Image 1 (cartoon, rainbow, N blue to C red):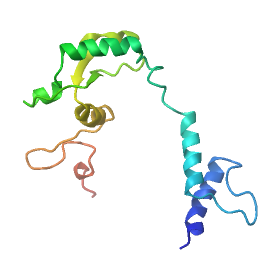
Image 2 (image 1 turned 60 degrees about the horizontal axis):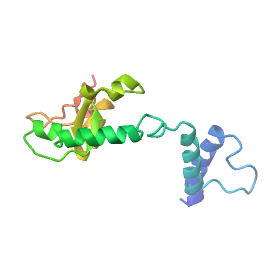
Image 3 (image 1 turned 180 degrees about the vertical axis):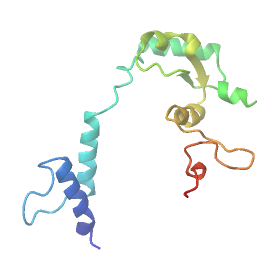
Image 4 (image 1 turned 180 degrees about the horizontal axis):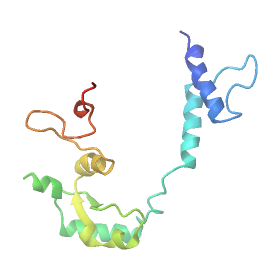
Length: 151
């Protein structure tokens, strides 16, 4: 199968999703992977997440974060497992979602190391549970191993 044959279905889908962006006439080459990637990035930019500054992470936050990290230098999750790890991230225990009061509530802050913040904390916020039980089975109820057996 040639590259053109592989790219053709993707190009026709793009033509449906983005009128005027697909092949426009006989002899036109279908969009290749680079063009498809650019179209995807353009479409995603329209629905982009606000910047860190737009979400409230200003210079005032940077100062408050530095003070909090000096007062609470160890990762709370690692500490709960008996491991001493330097914290690098001030995390909001409850996501603030633009709520200024919750954003600045120090009782809602916790110090985490980067692996804890970027790993299981983010997975939990998106509905995933990491880990296994004593039998080695995944503890995430959404894991395909935990799906009910088909009748």
